[in-house]
Image 1 (cartoon, rainbow, N blue to C red):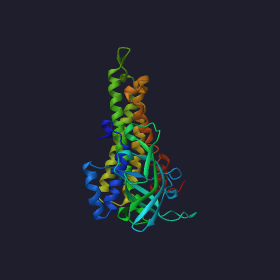
Image 2: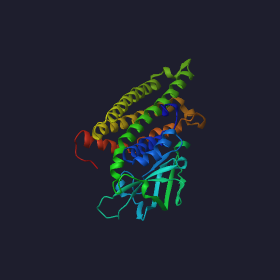
Image 3: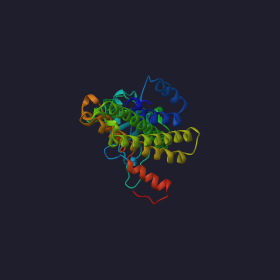
Image 4: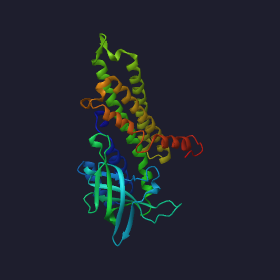
Length: 313
């Protein structure tokens, strides 16, 4: 619903889709009490730091390292494309806690780090997203993290990450559906108001049909998201939920992009004027096909784990 009113969705994807489920499912009672109430009230926000220059889809190539020392860990490394750390109070960091060994998967650990910790800094990236969707380079220079801020088991971060994937997929899909509805509403309003040859441009099938198709796809995606959410809340196995969540993410992001493309076409040249604020929504919709997991990897999942086809990557 927030995205349906034009709110940038990325930050609540990482906050509500990754950080909150990870803490609620894998945090100790003390950690839950320490972090969740303030996040739930909106008093504090938690972002997520996993992506690195050489570790995108392949998380096991992460080079940020956490070195154990006495009662704390020391983090060193770099992250990029980190959403909203400038507005966050904590950042959920994925780091390796073993030595890099060729051919061996990294042992990953999750740390909750206060953003005002000494040695933690960031720079804004020059992306073309809405300002609220700010992306950042993040630097860890001997950042000390107390052991009580380790989320889950040391070296067991993969289990925590996998548990958060389904909520993330669902929220991405839901945000895409909402964003698609927002741009489609604006497109149809303009198509009804803008007149040419003694009638509204919305009367022409060339503009009307693409928007009608986008509307149908958006509502299909919405039903898939609701189904995935029901299965998740019902406690169904992660594989059962994941099948629907991944397909919902695929259909939702495709539908959002189709809606944005059809809507901006209605505006013609005005669609590229800053005052109409359509290009930012178009770019945001296109981003859904790339992040947080790209369209091709989603298709790989569907082919291999749903259809039972051979691994294709």
